[in-house]
Amino acid sequence: MTVRFVLVAATMTALLGACASGFEGGTFVRQPFFSSYDNSMLRYTAGRGGMLVQTIGNPFEAPPREVSRIVAGHMEGAQFGPRMPFFSTPPEGFGSIYRMRVSLNTTMTAQAICRRESTAQKTAPSRQRGAQRVDVVMAFCSGEKRISSVRGYATGVNGPRDPKFRSLLRIMTKVILPQRDPHRIGNGHGEDFDR
Figure (spheres, rainbow, N blue to C red):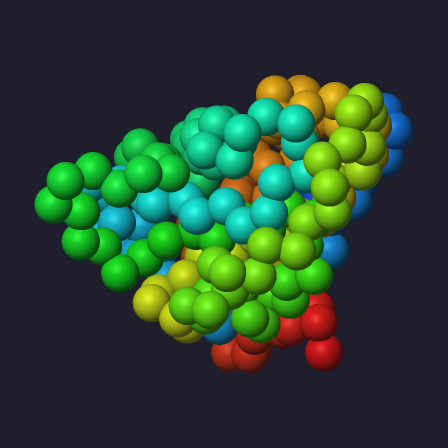
């Protein structure tokens, strides 16, 4: 086990630990999955204009398009690597194969979230008033292939602009878009939390 692997693993543990205990009301992030992640993917994405964020499901009272814009805004700047815009509507001429998928209170699995048909599976319950638990599945996709993903939740969330929801999304973004794949350093194997 290399020193670099130990440092990356320690960073991931600190991030997940902060998320698990850092908020009132309860927040938890499950161990992420990495397939063939490489930080050069982020440089490519930045060079193509930024990161497209596709949100599936909407447990809030706000309109879906507004929630999608807020989700992308919460995630922007949380990743390791080059700065780039995160947007819910691709700009003219956008052509990157990479994108983020974010599922909110749906039955979507991490394995299926990058597949084309997943955009139609909007299985969120009816929108609720007041504080609620929000379950999130987040994935970094290349076409229909899942590069990395993570699951988490926050309780006591009062709408999409709630600081607890924003913090959860930013930590999840940082976890699945790291400087390097922590599971492939030293042992060469990915890990899937849904097995």
